[in-house]
Image (tube, rainbow, N blue to C red; front, top):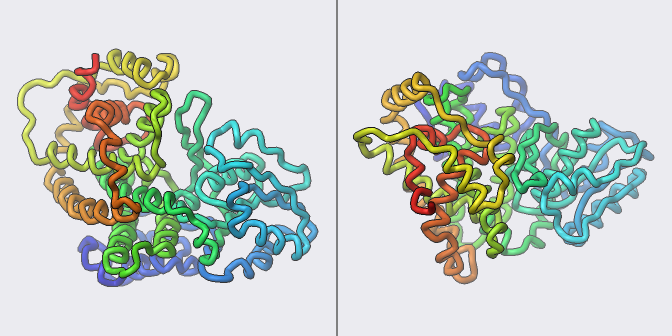
Length: 459
């Protein structure tokens, strides 16, 4: 892991900042207090999650940790699903019961889809003092939402590799219109992952989780682009930590004789979620990879096509978007390009995605003023070389990641062929900035009118 530090920015202060990076990658939470004026971005970063426990037999520490928040004999609500209950969840519930806690349960028969309706249907006992989630990403999203809504602390017992969002200060839940909403929540006070329980993880989740993490190279690029074009806050240390987490995972898979490094994958996902919490925003999950994957989910559902898991869609679109970014930054735009046609976009959203115009119009990006357009173009010209350098680095990373990604499937990725046809891919890329909030470099391309060509042929 130390070898990765050589790629960090020379602007990092050699002592304190590099020590902070090392502490973060080692998940030494006690070494991550408020760094008042210690981070070059000027923000005092902190963690709300007090304990992250990962290893074999780690659930033995759970009862003592719980005593910090609830006394014995207190009522605890456990939210899980039948699969997670079998995969170590039942043993965790028994451990809590034997420790003297009174347990109420909400067990989904099947894995929850992660929507607001599911979350709002959960009944919280009046005397409940803490919420415990046992499962993976979908359970964590619901638990964080429910606990925040009821002003209760929550603890996540993770038994999945799909963990990149678990510690993030937001829940991504789908509303009645099929649109994913990012809701600000309080992160869990503790996360426990018994490595023994990861043996229950189905193979289909492994490639998806790996792909979701690798797609975050695009999210990190968008984070950098937003800082220079849209003047959003940016932390160079956090950016470098994110790159290091992803690079380290690629190195582990590439060097390992084992086909699947499942524990490393889970731990890397946890670290990336912790990084989002440390930043105290959702920028790392607001990239164009996420936005395109979101539109693809809506499109496939509307057309009643067999969908793919979140991480699969996000990684496939990360590779598409990477090519678009690189091509644009390397080229020269000549001649007049008209501004985006939002009326056409509203028509296409209703026709191809099945969303009513009244719903889409609230999400669609407004047309920029002439002054804003001119300023955005000027800033891009000013920082174009820096963005192109970062983009070129991502090209090699995504090539290496895709090689690993394909081999996580039994058919070596044959099933990925023709998942995205040209028209579907173009439609999702073009409409992504309109249906997911957060500025990305793809948003810039939309604002400048460069994405309309992807959907004009569909008229």
